[in-house]
Image 1 (cartoon, protein in one colour):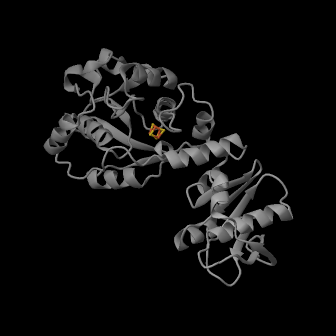
Image 2 (tube, protein in one colour):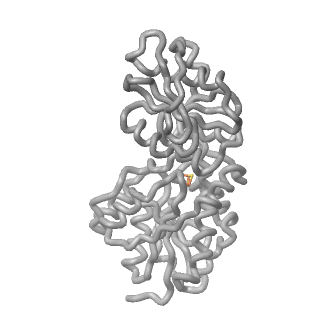
Length: 327
Ligand code: SF4
């Protein structure tokens, strides 16, 4: 039976949000699955699941507001630099702004009560709702029987008995539901968000602490080995050919470095000051540290805008010393 009311769905590509969408579709609702794009979570996983499930995915870029939020999340961070409660709240809020555009009436998500330590406890689900400012329009189809009624239930747009009562970390019920709905493809839980990665979070925190928190610098921390030379200067080195190529593509007007005539890491200096000869010498000696073909010293070429038109002869840095610079 076709239902009168329509909903937007927060869709990550994981099993829970897939089940939430399918459950509502099976009940006859028109559902618009929506993925919120940030620099920390690409569309690949969501797009692949959407394609397999036959959903038409809507991608909405929230980079700007997400970058503001992450610098001061009201509910703090999880284990790493993942502000999950604020992040969910923001996504719901952004979805609420799109309700009119899609002639939709309410918003659903695949959140399951008590499944994740941070963002899906009962109080956390409540905080997410409060943060979004549209708490009364949210429905969590997988757990809605266990949580407070919202407007769609009170007004009869959604029938509570048709919702589910899944809770906890055990995913057995979701597996059974997937089987019943004929879903055979779904990615393993978690993964996909760089903010849950310890190494990435460390590098991101370094950017925040050194006034380098912007989209370009965030793209750079996805690639290579990162070293802090001083509070204004970072060195990034490719760890293999593919990273060298990626760094080279990302470089704009920064100073870049390479060992002369000998293959090795590509280096990029990201700085918020004018670089001196001492900075170049330091960066070059670190670059040589990661070039296994160099014994003790070599010539490093460097320059701006990919013009390696300057030379400097430097000694390879001692292995122990280089650890002091690693982020
Ligand atoms: S895991 Fe990442 S994308 Fe998901 S809610 Fe947390 S911060 Fe946001």
